[in-house]
Image (cartoon, rainbow, N blue to C red; front, side):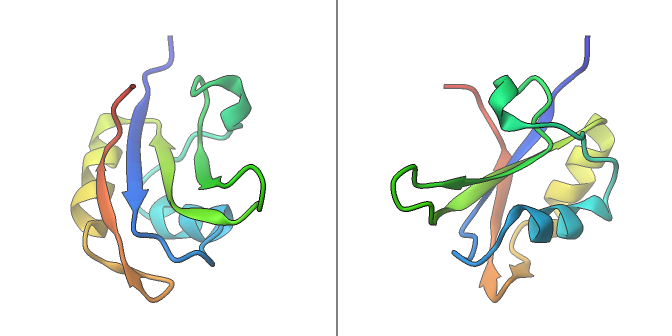
Length: 95
């Protein structure tokens, strides 16, 4: 079974898309390739958008293949500027 090492990114610019998020976090380790539609079984990178307007809600998720990579990315990216905004990075929790 594949372990899920997921971090949540809050405070994203409304212009930040999944490519920008993946490029920023990909330098810290291997990000799982996949699609959120498979209910977090292979999340990868996802910016959460309003289902009506299609605009970003200002947060997203990144899933790594290892716990070490997840920890390093969280430590290095929390509080950093991305697309002109200082982002908050925390471990994601279910429910």
